Amino acid sequence: METEQRAVTANGITQAVRVAGPPDGTPLLLIHGNCSSSLFWEPLIRRLPPTLRVVAPDLRGYGDTETAPVDATRGMRDFADDVAALLDTPGLFDAPARPVVVGHSLGGGVAMQLLVDHPERVRALLLAAPVSPYGFGGTRDLAGSPTTPDFAGTGAGTANADFIAQLAAGDRSEDAQASPRAVLRVTYVADPASLGADEELLLDGMLSTATGDDNYPGTFVPSENWPGTAPGERGVLNALAPAWFRLADELVAVADKPPVTWVRGDADVIVSDTSMFDTAYLGSLGVLPGWPGDEACPPQPMIGQTRAVLERYAAAGGAYHEVVLPGCGHTPHLERPAEFVAELLALTDVPAA
Image 1 (tube, rainbow, N blue to C red):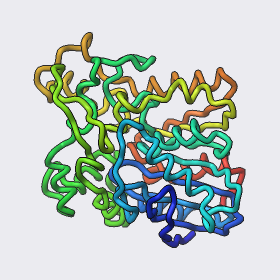
Image 2 (image 1 turned 30 degrees about the horizontal axis):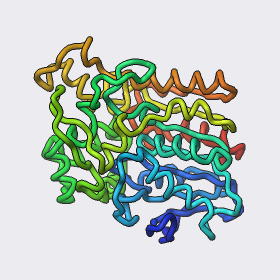
Image 3 (image 1 turned 45 degrees about the vertical axis):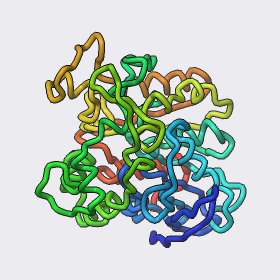
């Protein structure tokens, strides 16, 4: 399928939305992850049957959507409220829309929040390498207990300053270790060859990220706890921090429980029990000095946490299906598109093209 881009006003901001398929087709909502945009869905959309109605927005501060601020104290709710408003925006879906919702990474957190707030509007959920329901970093066990009272070591203060600077500068080089292109090749996928001819398109999506205190990465405050920084109240990385984003109990308590498919790669270095973006894990490797040790500050068991919550979801009357793709990294819809499409279509009940 080919997409067209539209600009719509929803939830008080101008949102850029990619649309494909007939308006009365089976509705599918695609929510992209951090430091990307709806461009990251283009390679997948090309593989989808034409009977689907696909809507893929740019989240606030990404792509061509308005650079509206992110109130981190609301967790993923600023993003989820924007997306929820699209469900009733004329011309996008046939009303009343109840789409299959696909969320990648941060977008998985947005999708979970959408389900918690509007369970009657979600037909099924596909979580692709999603953030833990207990947020990113700072929680040490399967119950999401905090490592420190102020969630030190999470949020905007943990971001790589060189990457932020090169992102803001629109750097397309491949020389520096922290250049957006290098990060795309090394951390977004396990095999950079999987990017193929779409690498420039995907880099465009990364470089569309709005940087600053209100967007990526956000603000931070000093902490007396290692490694000396704690999340602030503005911006994307703080919205992901467990100080503000923790919806495990709310997810389990949803009355109307649609089926959930969880797709992840076993070579993911971003969302992992050994994440290269988890300060505690980096401390355990000696990359960050002064780590207080495993008892005081163990790495976050992100995969174990998500599984534990989804098992509780199933025990409470829902259903979930976990798919682990060997040798796949953080972006399974790019790296293993055939398997990903099969799982997606199983949720839509639409036959493959």
